[in-house]
Length: 539
Ligand SMILES: C[C@H](N)C(=O)N[C@@H](CCCCN)C(=O)O
Image 1 (spheres, rainbow, N blue to C red):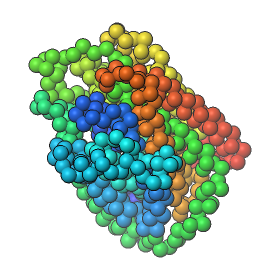
Image 2 (cartoon, rainbow, N blue to C red):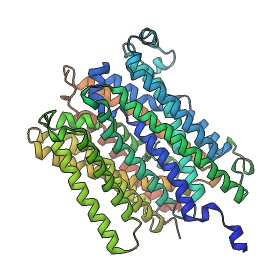
Image 3 (cartoon, helix red, strand yellow):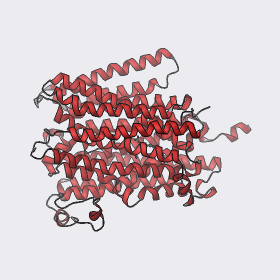
Image 4 (cartoon, rainbow, N blue to C red):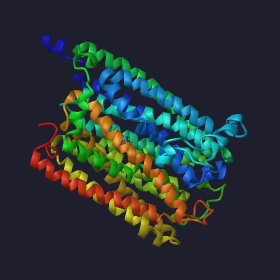
């Protein structure tokens, strides 16, 4: 009887995984919106006149307020003071608001509007920011890109606040249990969001034979409405949990600004943050250009509009197969029976081969790149589980950085050698993308669950916020730098599918090299100071 009374929602596996599912589905929708324009960079040039610099500046704006107005730091403080559920709802609402602005900016109704005229004439110079060279706008930037950037900045505040809140929420529900597995599963669903976006953003933009880029953004907005509903349901579960545990995070142990000092004085924290910014700067900004990079490096034969492979139903079937790949790989993690685990894995691999074949037949760069997050869906939870039971997080960070270097150098120097060989290029692209996906499983699965080992529980929210803030500097800078380097190294190229991506890719590989050395140093420090990064989470 006493046992029963003591039981709380988080003691029930079904309840804590339901809470995770709600948060993870909300992040799934958010990740779709983050990259909603990434697979249609070429259309943004032809339909809205965004060159690579305009596209990169808009894409980088997502993190602008987080970095330069220190919004993420405030978000961390709000999270530690107000708790998970309040901050989660706030982040959902902010994301939706920003997304609506971005939708208006790229919609047909913006064209020729008074707002377009105003933004064309204004915001070309931002005092202070321009002098520092960090302005989110520039002279000649298309008005639609400026307004989209404003919306994306607001959205970025919501999504990053959501990211730290979800991590904090997972610690709250899973600490001492399957925490890394839960984080890995949440990220797996987020990766599926990226894959979904790669397939459906171009699908909606080109639906019915006419091109309208705002349809893709509208799709993202609808998903963000669903995300907000998920968060509100989570709100009530979280409230119930607190009433059972009598924990009032925000009142029991109030956050103090001096706590930030404790975080900043930890060497382990700085190394993890540095590795995080270097690694993620070579992944997320790349993701925004990857489809275009493939369009530029692969030789595609145009698929006739009336062909079977060009039909919308094939896109849907390919997406269903993608879900089978992801679900099979993900579910195999949870099979206790060895035979069932092998069966799920085999089904997933077979579906992956079918998926890849369809991508090749459709001659579609976006569906080829969509395999990138797929491997992560299956592997991240496995690796999370490994970190929970065996540890070795620091080693995984080093290995993930090595794979990253290998992949970017392959894209830069080997893939272009296959230009002209349709099948050869696609095979090299698929293999490299899948290896990059494996790297993108290793690093996140090891990095995020390591944070609770670096700081005390009550300041985890602020620690995540600080890491995200440092990471956001890179996520702001690198989309912009890639765009600028592209424009500089391709001065006379007008066809958006004929750009040379060598130098941006070399730049990203260099980030991997730096991350690799930081990872090695982290291993040394971990051993010397006994941080426990190589230790399992569950002892
Ligand atoms: C972009 C974002 N700041 C980020 O770092 N995302 C991580 C996940 C962080 C943990 C979220 N609960 C990612 O790997 O996607």
